[in-house]
Length: 223
Length: 223
DNA sequence: AAAGGTCAAGATGACCGCA
DNA sequence: TGCGGTCATCTTGACCTTT
Image (cartoon, rainbow over all chains, first blue to last red; front, top):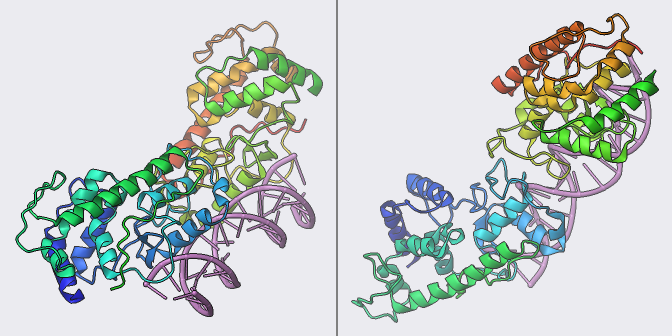
């Protein structure tokens, strides 16, 4: 089952056009298409583009960004972070991630990291697969999240959850792609977008506090 | 003698217009005019605007910027400094001085710091007085250095060096102010401008190496 | 007085145990 | 498997010694 999904995913990676998506996602796609390895194991950190160590606080991140986010949002360490003097335009990558805490934290929040959504135990592969497909679009806008989701074919969803009848041809306002999604996909997506929008708004409104959304989407069934 | 110079300096600080000079200099002037304290003892760091600890490597700087410059340019530590990702536009102040090494080093060079010009022992008060008068204009351009020098009145120079006859009315191309300077002042200024221009050019051409000019101006007579 | 050396304090991130 | 704790490593800058 998972093998099928992963194979299907690889095929779709090659089809995905990256225009209009943010740079991180492009980098991820390029690397991923290039070596054609397991997309669930060969992730990059959504914050700094390093090789990711795993799925932490709601996003694939490296050990450094995991520790940073855990430390910063964990205790009352947020006060130690001062305003960015460069208008929050600092580039966060492997070399510069330690330069500006404000921008690093901002990017962590932008890619969907959240302490409230963290928990022990494993996420379902389906959940993480969704994150892979969405890439780092989470941090961009509602539109780009929708755009990023086009990599998921109905076949995968049907195979994963067989409750949706085959041959549906549902038209949805936010679906402008040839690929059709089952109705519940948009419900979940809508939930995700709403919760992410809240976290973004909160992050923008008051960077002295941590985002408290429950992660991108609560699909945490055990697989 | 020194008392006279310091008193004269305070009077001139109030006269000085700061338009066309760079922000550091403005901040210094404002602070200095405000509390009216001894301008030789109440300096600010030309790099980060902290209170300065003394005159180090060719500029008034704090302990931190002194150590940073000494460490960075001392051994072959320049390789550890990576390119600025923000187009070398980082603001360097007390809070952000540790954020971007490239911009911090750049600013050190811009305000005239240099290892080659460093030495043990004391500088003459005259030399430091000149630095005070020039403020941080050193880092801006030849024109602003000239503009910054208008704070030195002929009276000070005459009292300091009595070889120049009173009542000279020398016309000089770079002197657009009502205050007149003796001819040798412009010779020294020209030397300084040339050597500083070299250091700036070198700093801009190759930031992998340290500036090797002999400091702003070699007026190091003992007072 | 201004170099250069020293070292405590803080930040970082690789590693590990636990749930 | 992911969270939180640990600690070696690095950077910083106040203080001290040397010239």
